Length: 235
Image (cartoon, rainbow, N blue to C red; front, side, top):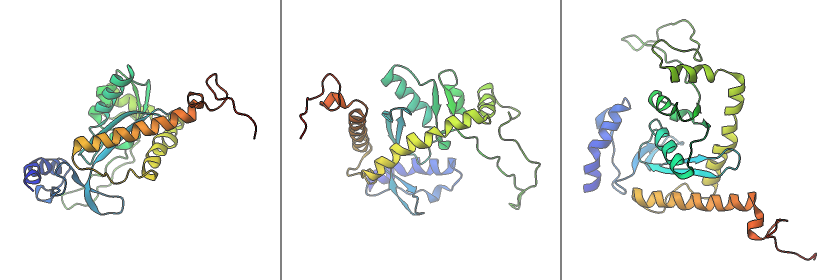
């Protein structure tokens, strides 16, 4: 309870930054590190935001992180830094979920990778009474006044059919790995506290990558027809 009360001011500031009210912030009394997040079923429960970066071709997890923020908006640069540290380089192209596409994140990685991420629809403007103001149609894939060069290039790039075709690969890779995690039980963490939850996510990534290694290079376990394969007699 004391740890939850100590974390409440941080959660209140995050709620205000997200456009909510400070009094709406809730701290978890069962796990003070967790944040109360909205779930897919519409309910609110203490949770962690687990992040995986996946290689598109091999479906190997190359980056892992767990954060207490419900939004992905500030998570792209830390993940890019982690992948660069682990692998010695940043991928030439990065297919990011729409939740990661924030202006400052795009600008921060522009000199290291080509970011592919959906351009959000233009926000409708409202008057003082909250009514929508009619506006002429806007082309979201055109550079906006005031855009920096990285932002302008990103908007135009995502309007190209060949880029949109490349981006569709994300659903078959990252979302596939995410679905596998859910199917294997990574829905509820068996531990409390951010350090322990991060350990569970890392152990899962290790197990996932070992299974991918078996699928990609079965000869390392003596399967298949490689030089290390076990000679098997017909039954």
